[in-house]
View (cartoon, one colour):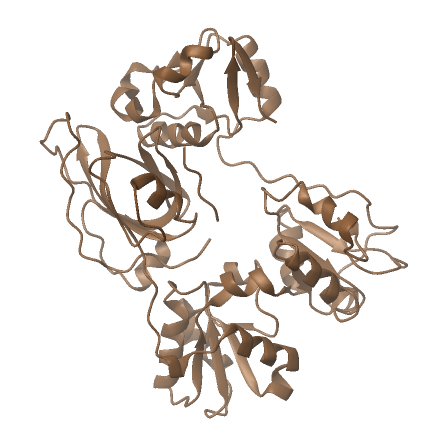
Length: 463
């Protein structure tokens, strides 16, 4: 199993690809070449989609399941592959297939060419979008941008624009930046300064994202003589520097929508109330940072605030970033929150940090899964998608085994009138099985995202 990590935005650039040869031992006749798919953001550069092509974001890969999973907006597409035939291009690490797939981060922009063999989608070639080249005289480095941000726009004499779509801006932005999404550039170009000789800097989601270079070019076409690109973008900045979030975005994009996050109150005194859901975190000492450590795998969004955005929050957030957790500072702090007309909750901030990620569609909670496998109902199929050799140490009594790499071709063995709950040893293949069955027309499907290990016939179920 290969598990990949986290999100950039723009899809893979058009690269000439050829359909791979069919898998060994499989029928050589391709039954059909389905219409292509691409994420909506891909339409910014690609007006058509070639048949048998998927443009989207890398989500997961499993060598045991011989499958990869691609995100196309809200849809997850699962494709099988023949380890002896799949070609991977531009992966961060060369070498064998497992190493190449393991080096691709979750959210990376990719293009996949595939064929349909019978009813199995089989990937022949996967291309990771390469770094876009920007002339050196049009670039701003992380160090240069950090100096400008420290001075502020007035003293530094610059204008910083985030070229990502608005919803991504709401997830945090580089301090002092204003949102000017490239897909809406014509509509929002009025945000550009009147002085066309001013330093104007655009950034987006990193070196493979085309939106900031495109925005820079569009600004230059309007007559701006000093338009540049911070090409490393948000991925590099957030590893070493704090991000920012406005009170309006915190309330409307996070709190009102009940999106899970960790909200930290860095004030020495919470007199007068707190922003709803905040936890006391005034110093960011080692004991405080240890409180965040248990959430390291979940990678929660972290927002820090103080009285006015300049007293303790920047220092606390910087310590959190230095410890390896991206963090945002609430611009203007409590003063700006109140000035926006938002209310504070009475009392002191909470002491314990709680973060519960929103479950994925189809995900079964641990208590429900435990009850389910203890006595499988007549209207439910517990689908074990592990390989046959993994069953030697045990399986749930009454469960059905179809290995994940065979599921697309054997889905007809499962009853569509029953609920099907998939599991594997880690949750990766189970999620792929869920998406495979949904794609095959099964409506009542779920999956268990945690680990399931068997020892001498006894199951140990992860929490």
